[in-house]
Image (cartoon, rainbow, N blue to C red; front, top):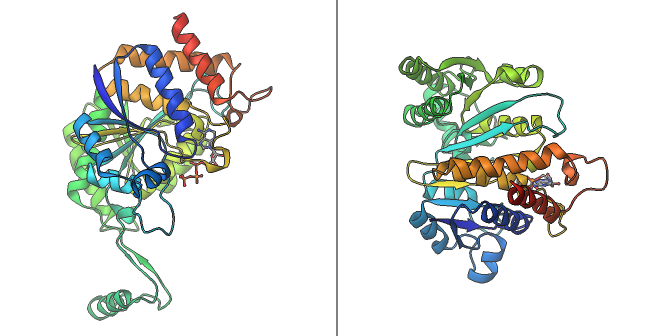
Length: 357
Ligand code: ATP
């Protein structure tokens, strides 16, 4: 029996987490849930959005299933998602974007996986505020040593890209492609403009690609990648991107396959794995039974595969696919023909498919 840390989160989190727990329990996958609060409910109970015991639980269980959590703005708490990534060294974010029959989309068959580097790049948080003393020093230094002018009214964010982090994520993408029998890995970059960051990213990846000759490899500029995704997304298979491009392109891909309500995700490190839907806490629809639970249920499918329970994962995925194909129970985000189904009704339909099959 596998023990998994379950973090319901806040906003629509508790609703979709409860739905997911019901669906996984209906598979009889032998999961023991170790439930912990994080986000808004944890602030009420413990005075912090990410109490130490939550991290301890993930470190013990190695695997977590997490709903969305909001970091309250202006309270001085650091982002919970960033904290989890850093504390657990979750360097790879993986977003499989598969189009299920019955989901409204402009395309017919899509199966793309976006692999995103999670630790550095413009999101590393190395920032200089406009008008600050620190930025004045940096401006002076850059101007004196290199003759680089930075406008007086500019703010600055720094983009570090290292060989080490690039190697980790590119190897991860190739290994993932091999393990999942995918055709090719496409690497996005902007090496022509940012020669020393994206240039290093590209050069490192091209060298590594020589060790993975059994998987196809191509490198294209990220703007061209965006064009292909809008035009012929079927051409793409596994896409590997640095942090910022990966954030944008993975939401784009989620949009191609039906939107945030059906987009699962996982954050993986060498030791720990956190499975979570791509969407945030969606406060606009929270507590109203309007949320689509499928993104989190599909995240649990990924979790079951990671736990080495492929048969259970396949069963749960088939039940979700069955409900989507049938089209009778759809939440509002999937544009149903009639009145939208409630979160619990979609879950009931998935559980009924599992009980029947
Ligand atoms: P965050 O900043 O935490 O990402 P956000 O509100 O900016 O939060 P999301 O929560 O990801 O962004 O969602 C954007 C919108 O998409 C929501 O306001 C909601 O209307 C819709 N949405 C997101 N997730 C779902 C879902 N599971 N089911 C239905 N609609 C959803």
